[in-house]
Image 1 (cartoon, one colour):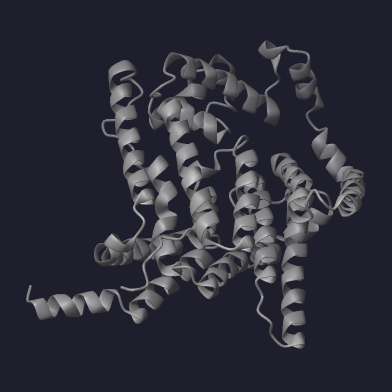
Image 2: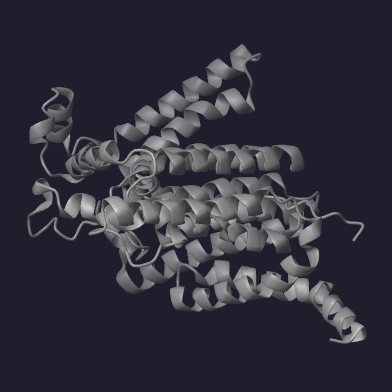
Length: 420
């Protein structure tokens, strides 16, 4: 290729117009992911292939840590697959599945186009909020889900299932609060209007959190709220801290008095009673019981191959080969309702160590490159994500990966040197 054409090609793929075009694709991917998955997949492919030229021309200017981790994730998955071929060939696929750990890195391809811009970060997060609210309102219009929620029924707005709706509701609250904290000093009337809009989004998300009735998410929110005063108020201001915790306690007690909340929390008291009595062999197959029994079955697989695991394809066989799951209702279960156990079963302790290193890299990057609000956003998300992932494999499901990708893409810095 003539040098002049090479230079023109480089100028095209490193231009502001090209950057804006791919960023628009990022926004469209975010907006369409909830209402129209097939359309969002198209935009995701545009982001992936559109980012390749940027990686080619700018790779020398990027921090390489996250790319090394991506390569390590592929290596771990190949080694685990080879290990399974030797020890459990009946459960291994003919080729390794490279998606489970590699999918965690999709955020990098969006982070390229955010490039530390506060405006683009807020636009990305706002598009996520818009996607949730518009999808929910469409479901309210078509399925009358608002009336169902007000009558005490559990709703999900068609977002996979209710626990995903609860998860998305909390993320909408966190992102809206972040955006409001980052609002520039506009005219008073404009700022009040934006606060009213943001407050409405938070109020609707909180209602959705209540109506979707997911106990695991309620637990995570309770823990998050319990930690928030220490971070936001500080331990030096004891009086403010006591007042804040008193108000928080009164609020949570008041919410707990709602009949629908009480019923949901104590709905499976028999399973909880069996667990507390240590009767692990006769746990009823309720929602909680299915989780605990699947975890007990997973522990057997982990004990047999704790270091390198049994490959990702082995996860559904944990329950499908277990005696307790051989009923017509439960035979279709193919996951363990715990992301960390699934990683351990699939990739062994090596996989868990990889997750620790991965999130350590995210933490260090954001701490070193972002401001206070961004750090608080990351802390809130990681605490919340850590807890709910103990009860559902969010990082192995599309909607979970979608949330994970958008949050980390907005916060992670690839550290492009501006002199190029």
